[in-house]
Length: 121
Image (cartoon, rainbow, N blue to C red):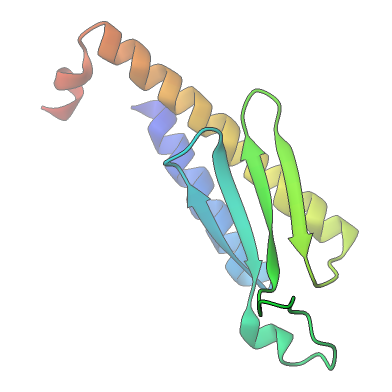
């Protein structure tokens, strides 16, 4: 399935980007609608700062990008992040979310047409 491959490639690209160019880990949460892409700062990187970036529960917070028809962003961070990096992270997360919607749409159409078994054989 072409869109599934594109979606998987976009997820891999996002994870590689986060690993190489940010101090964030990324988690793609598919078991809900809308799809959620969650960025969490690396705790090891936070130890370099003198400020305490945790809340009263010891949580650092995260950035969530929800990809539906209208993508939304929820920022619950106790750290600062550069504007250009934040834009790039959100842009890549939105691309993943859009490809996920296309992939799920294609999957539903194939299932409705009874074509899902052909792909698995």
